[in-house]
Image (cartoon, rainbow, N blue to C red; front, side, top):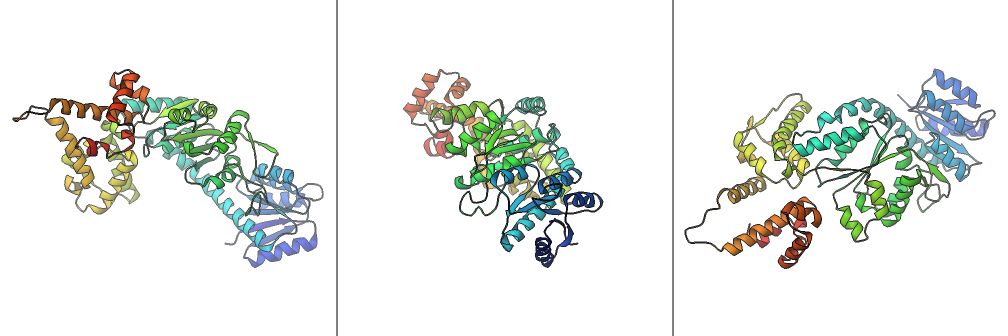
Length: 474
């Protein structure tokens, strides 16, 4: 069924021109010449898009779209005008208008704007349907874990979810930082509004500013229309800034202003735009070290770190591995209508429980999915597990099983030195290079730990997963 577009234009020639162009593209067109007629008609008939002139008798186009949007929040709106300026464009976008086109316009520009607006309407409708599903999916019950460290995380999430406090989530890659961010949002009073995720590392620096804050037409080469940014899209809801450590110093300053003042400017504009957005940020980097090196703004760090939540790596909560395995097995079976049900043998479970899981929960989930697809038998045995899992698990078991003195003796100093090196590297890895925290784990003074690191030349061992095998023989 073709999308329905309501054209609101008091100029007969202009109205007929818009109608011909869009009718040719396959849309169903309804025309009116006043804003009041448009509002009354929209109360009786469904429309996917309102395309309105700005200057209309009795009621301007922005007010038309605003009033129609109150009864139909999913509808999209476009303003077409020959009297526009940057201020009116920003006002229009803040009141629900998704695009703003100046006359005279190019036909392709109009078609592009209409197509994007129709797609936006479809997304709004889909989002509304999915919201209840998302709230159920991202309830606290769906973050699996009974380890004491995870129980502390759950309690913290529950305390902060229904506040507006800024949250900084830290943890290794694959630990589930975005899952925690979504649980916070969908269990807050903002859950009816959007959660807008942004991966700061995945968007080129030259585009990230426009992506976050939007731009006005002509702000830079290629800016052929006005465009709202992610902060504007998240107004009333939550923005999730993943990989926040990758943000450039220039953008850090602009983000700091949003956190402090609740406002920003579109790229190419000096007019401040106010927003009500909760910020949740995440990183797998050590921001304390980045601040100390001058790579991350200290004032921004303190603004982000109001409520810190650290997600422990899977190797620090091995008792949760059987729970996660059962969860993923059940989830995969449900996704396939209950078919292809599998279970792990006792030996296979012991093997994966000894593995360190450098990719954390995400690595475990991917492995379960692959085994469910490729394993023909109902029971998954150690033979089906990848070599890296079996070999690493075997080394771990061997290292912890026999510390007896060999018949031909041993190099005690070398053995002790190797164990000491391994423990230091493990402490640095667990604390992501934080020497203060690593020293506490090892029961050492920080100065003593620093001297040992220098002496052993293991400054970066925590960043290199092959360091120990290359330097200690296993």
